[in-house]
Length: 152
Length: 152
Length: 152
Figure 1 (cartoon, helix red, strand yellow):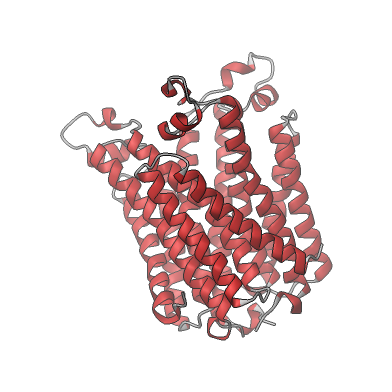
Figure 2 (tube, one colour):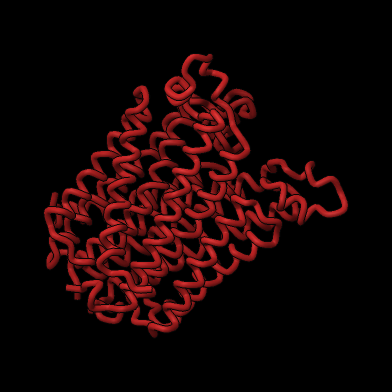
């Protein structure tokens, strides 16, 4: 049986993937926070529950702070899913530990910076660069995986 | 070679993950169903194909029933992806079977209830509670994984 | 330790999953390309950086070419995530190599065709058929996994 304990690269991947997925989950909480504080809901039942004493219909609206967090969340999803799939398979392909750690650290660092740059917001190209570092790291793992283990 | 047959926790994870992913896939079918029955399409080529005999342009519109299913689908994606990544790595970390089963069952039950609460729709806090149970279960697996196997 | 080298089905899954995830990542680049060439941004800081010399506010808008790529990207995410989860667990369940290859090839082929049909765009039912082939392949893997390895 494979265990995380037997495989340092897989164990490192588990730590970095868990951190970046937990960060992504925080975006749900941030969306809920802005929806409640800005009173900007998508569903009538939410407005009815959280906009009491007033006409709840008027709280079914979009708010720029909510939409910004939602865009950051969707961008996370679009980039963390490839990292999760390609990174796990790369970790199982027996790469050099130092090289794997470099990939995982750069990706997680870039995505943390991407979130800060999106939510602050920082002027471009801060967010753009963070995006492309994460993107490049994932493509680098994909390239190594296909170069060494292609089986079609 | 690791096989599902050798590892009960991984086998249990495979069953629960497959069930919750299949449920998520049903949301695509539900969206298509509402798009066709409500005649509310996003693409001109869909309206042209499914709104025959009339001016298809008028069927390019949003419909609240379609948008509700799409929000439920996106919420699934945002929550099932962390469960998939963290849950698989947690299953590979050699947890106690009873504790793992409790996590998997609570998550899948909470997400099934979340879908019912979203589509019915049930008044809040039904959907909110379902969301937080699934969220808490995933964070609990993340915590156990990092506590026992952190490798940065 | 399990390695990709020891398991042909897992190695094949790694290749096909990496290809379909890399294709999905291209959608981010396509979105950025259309946002820049059409000057249609979602964030003020992007419009300020890329719409220089003019009033950047007027470039915060939606554009049909951008929205089409974004819909194709989200549809990819909704379908590639179940393939990634169910496909990996199916690959670990020890299926027949020929049968596994058939599933992986059909899925990846269908998703490549789906993207072409979405972006061209081709008239329906081209995109619809591509969607249902990928969907059916994933459900077929889910069925085989649950039939042979159900553990609740």
